[in-house]
Each structure stands twice: as C-alpha cells, then as structure tokens.
Image (cartoon, rainbow, N blue to C red):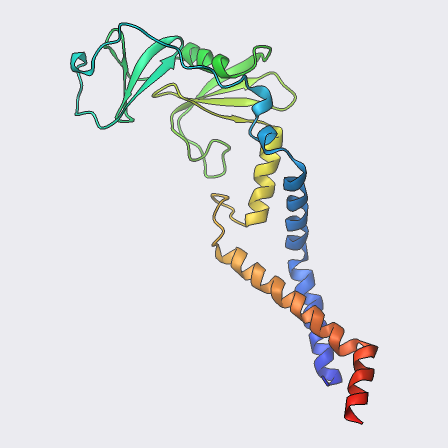
Length: 236
C-alpha cells in the first residue's frame, strides 16, 4: 500500500498538473464542441456562393503555336476571366486565348466580375483592395499573392479573395470561419500554420495530460476506502 507521504505527493502533483494544463483542456473541450456542432460547408462559406458555375465554351481559340511564348509549355489551363478565355501556362503566364496578348495581371473590375460569377447576386460589394503580402496569421495565408480582397456589406464581415496573376477565385472568409480558425489553432496548438500536429508544445501537453489522468487514477487507488478494505483482507 502507498504510504501517506507518497499519497500526499501524488495529490499535490495531480493538483498542480491539473491547474497547469486545465486551461488547455478547457480549450480542447470548447473547440471540440464547436467543431462537432458546426457545418463545415457553412464554415467554408458555401451559403454565400452560387452553385459551382459551369465552364463557358469558347470558339476560335488560338493554338499554342500562335502565341509568343517565352518558354516551352509544361502545363496549360483554360480559364475564364470576366467572360474572356485565357491560357494559364506553366502556372506563371497568362495569355488571351483569342488575341494572343500576354496579360500581366487582372484589373479590379475583372476581379469583381470573377467574384460575381461565384457569389450570390444579392451580395453588395463594400470595397476592394490589393494585397501584396500577408502575415503567417492572416486569413489568406498560404495562397497566391498578390491578390484582390473584396469586402461585402454583411454582418458576417464577408470577404472574397481573387488572385491577381491569373484571376482565379481563391477563397471565402467570414466571421464563423475566423472563429473556427482560432479554435482550430488552440486545438492543434500550432500557433503558426494551424495544421501541424507534431509540435513540441502539443506533444508536451498531451504527455502532461496523460500523466494527470494516470495520477488521478493512482490518487483514487490510494485514497479509496474500498481498496483499503480489500488490502487489509488480503494481508490477514
């Protein structure tokens, strides 16, 4: 049987471990509840979008041999920007598929047309601005830059991002997504990229959590009257 001094040490260790990691346990619980009670499609902003638009068909497009290309083609994609067809070549160069002219970047009006193709028609645009760089914690992190940030007049602080180099519709961000992003950060304990489950902090807190639970079981064992009675009977 564990001695009284040892039991007191276990109790003290359990108390301080619980105090130290209790806040993180609370965040894990709150974030887990939020994730289980929310619709991931709503988090992605699907309620603000039209159904996936159909690809427009075009006629009389130029062949690649008619373009004044700067390098051999490795990959090619046909894009629609404001109703016009474009070749996106090698993920770097944009050419008008009818005139053959190279396009360095899209305009704000073209970005608005791209957004209108995807977003619900009753949404009103508040402002549009160009962003050249973002921090590691920005809601547009990890996506092509520069980009246009289009803000809408909504209570959800709705924003849409369109890449400037190829006019590709990138993503939707709104209030619920930002809450999800914050809680996901506290859940994974990756305070940079959000999605790394192998951080030292997460491993340390997981290990401390296991120790806290095990110390709780041990504390129950050392202080349980039933266990004490059983141990006394076995000694007789």
